[in-house]
Length: 488
Ligand code: MN
Image (cartoon, rainbow, N blue to C red; front, side, top):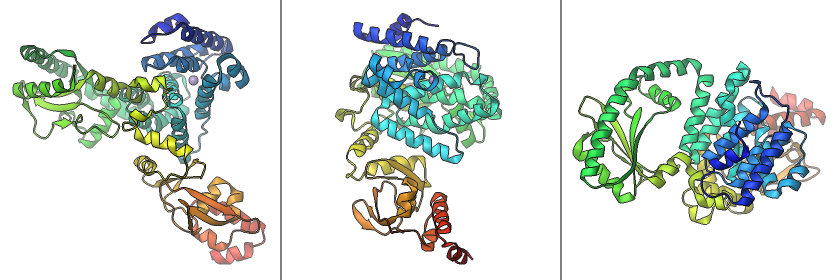
């Protein structure tokens, strides 16, 4: 297990004396708090804490997040109280530790779990991204040690990681983390499929290596001839889970997939990206239709690079990705690559607005509920086509099935609000209680003590929760006979 000093030495850039002290203090505090606790593997619990923090240092997180990383399990798993953390480490670190603890208390509730997890993530993300990144690191280490967990629980955690964590990491542009989460979860989520992919890859490894080295040798020479300095030329093998997804789309035929391995050329500046592309196309024949300029048109998660696929000449086909250092860092670390986030506690700053605007919007939404928000609509529909997300005037997110009504909304806020709803305002305008809500709507329900549900409501609502509440109200208030006759 690493010492506090070893952890500090992992942090890139300068660590002030004060920061180093803070980290050491958190290390010692957590070490004591978890003393005697063991993980399923039999290892001391603190090993998990240290490994989680190591992932945070790889992601380039700030000193507060590192310190909070050490404390991330003390509220849930030890006797340490919130006041103690506040006293020892202050409000900021307490906020981070509380945030990650809240994200961790998800209860398994079948299908609902998926939506509920996402909802919690959205809210946490809007407050402080560092909380979400800590949760990612925690989850990644838990996935890496999943072999020690009970089989049924194991698959649930693995599936949740693939369904919830990985897509979110991807949305934040954190490609490396996304790939690592998926690949750690893959063997437990889909064991059979994992074995098949492994077999396919094993067979291909040698031929791939051969033509990759041929192409990279030649490319180095051509770049030298043209006086282009490059920062790095390396290659990556496609992550297993994303290869699995792609194999499904290509009849399991790996020879139809051209980016199983890809050569990466990292250059100094933007102009060089295009010059390198020109040199590559002058040296090898490109496959038509395979040139993708994600610099001119970045992917929605802000990924930038130029991709091209070439005939290697020796019968092979290879993808080459060209990018600058900055683009590379962004592709790997996404939002965590931006130093301004670190300085500002990873709260989104105005200048970065365009990149991760949807998070900024989400955050602003929470503080200015009177502003309708198109971005939230867009964001949510990406994740769920059959769900809508609507908001309370305070900015709380409520997720519901499509074509839900304001009454459904009222019941999902609280049964009392449902039972006494008289009218609804949607985006500031009066609306029928039986109207259809849309993604991103802000809904306000007016209540009156003497208002109550009727059988008409039962027919109008979409959610089972609302139906249940209405039914029980009708039964309780001797409206049962009426209710039954309505049903028949
Ligand atoms: Mn943990």
